[in-house]
Image 1: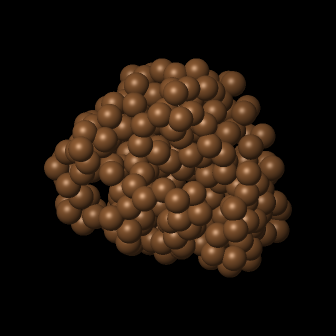
Image 2: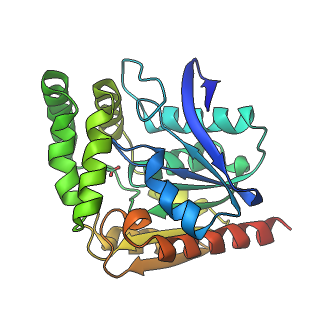
Length: 262
Ligand code: MLT
């Protein structure tokens, strides 16, 4: 399905029927399909919304920088379109940066949040520069540049590396460039964690080579109602690597969020 949101068509799908709407937001260069096996096998009754971020999957990929606050506004527009007043938002990696921007700007629409192999801090000056240089490289050489650099680090499982490589290769270069520059420009959102009083879930992969689990522990320590889950044998993609474990934690978050509204 696609919805017209902030002047672009946003791809999404809805699975399951029960519970508070759980919105699962994919990471950089990927798309909503990363969640599907986990949802279909381990949480089939739960009402789940899977959006494609702008520039990714079946969503339009306009020119320009995609600030995390704009990606969050797209999710807000989708919730409005679906007439969803309160949701639990969970983001994977860059999807977590979007979740934090949403939490900062539209907290009243949230019943809970989940941050999966993600972080709240800003980039170092070197990392910011790298992201701009990388965007230039993608402009010259296409999305394969991200597939070649990200997929091999994303997991230690061949199947996950191969699947994500193919997803990233198909992602629009404009989407990768817009998101890369948007991530470079993002500010620290550690303060957002300090003031969020609703149920939260923080998930780390113990073998994640992209985001160290110390970042996750730090985030959990700042949240009033966080469950912290550090998954053994998971890298950056627990929804594909350890789907049963992650699904159980997400269902628990959904129940805690519903109880806190009751
Ligand atoms: C992601 O997986 O979304 C990215 O690696 C996050 C990042 O580049 O900071």
